[in-house]
Length: 592
Image (cartoon, rainbow, N blue to C red):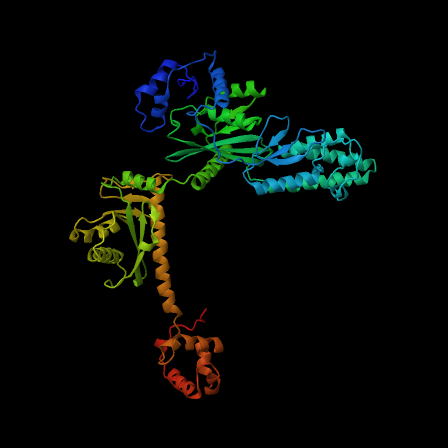
């Protein structure tokens, strides 16, 4: 699809071109708001015929990569992650870069964990003794090697201490090390060490032994419990939310996790449900300049044409690559790992706008209006004692801590959570009505159907009361009076995310208040029940003697040594302690 200047707007492939183009004009595209603007710019449609679907896929990926049409989905990772680069020089160096060029150099990565990459680079330089300097070697004349050579961190190429052929062999071993091919590398070094020892070249044998130990130590940094030891594979998993799709790629070489990368796609830009996902896999390898391993393990949700994708990989990389679509077992375990990483990435890097969560909650509960102000209630007590209620306020999906309130339950005796909830809701709405302030749009109650009915019972006496829903904790089910049956929220849905966030916040706030009251009561020393002994004097006595019992056992002279006590007041305290009844002794905890 091209504009009036013959510039590509969108590039795609189709078996039936007429049907594919027609679909753009017959569908209103309510779920893809980018399509109408593209059609407004559309001037004409051009096409190239191919012999097979595989050829069409290759051509599509190539043209998208070269032309970069604005309405094609792109693999975006938000930032340029670092790569390790072995330069294309007579005596190569190992560098950290953030861009990949076709300059004959070898690139390894990208690394999403820069700290892990730096540790890997430290081990690599220590093992293979590559040069760090930026001199253009070979030099016209030999120079004195630097300090790195003296401490065994450089092979001294600038001073002619190593031949170009030997240095190149070292670089080849470094490339194997960075690609994760460490089993063969260790076997080769072990063989070289044994040969050096048999020739009585003990210094060389010791150097090779140290290299072996360092390679094993570096491998331990990346070891993962994959249950597929020695496997070389790329794992592709996808995780979906209401707005985005995250494609996560985990690269394993010889059982080691050597790379991880995430790519996100907006659903409104790309019809994820009905489109083929082959192009995502193709574009990944074209974009990262990576050579695929012998096996790709894909989630069944990605829905690729296995035969066509294997054919493309074989034509592009001249090697046979097996596509595996497991549904159970060890390989499915790896896909679950990739999808879990994708979920964590989306939660951190693609937070949904808070107001979108509110809209999702409205739709899920069939609420007649958008609940822009939500107040949530929770009850906390200990067998009916220290009963409190907490209320939190969210505006447009964001916590408004200035609107938080807490209540001591005054009218309910015993453990009756329903009555306590009625009291708290009634007191809140009464206060708003007296102050002439608007009611919230929605009350969210922590509990099930019983709590929902309890919260609704006092609303009849108010004009235009707020809407009410309840969230059951165990089942994560919403009870709404506007739906015929309880609402089972999807685990990754925006509505569930908001409801759980509010429920957890009101629970935290209420329990904190309950613990504060209970702790204040239990921390009150029995000394404070004595006339004339306040908190500060009680603290001084407890710090001096250690406990109430020892205060009782002390003499008048010993009590008079405590700041704030005269001999007369000390004697008075002793008399009062002697007549104190056991019932008044609550606790003798030391104050903190």
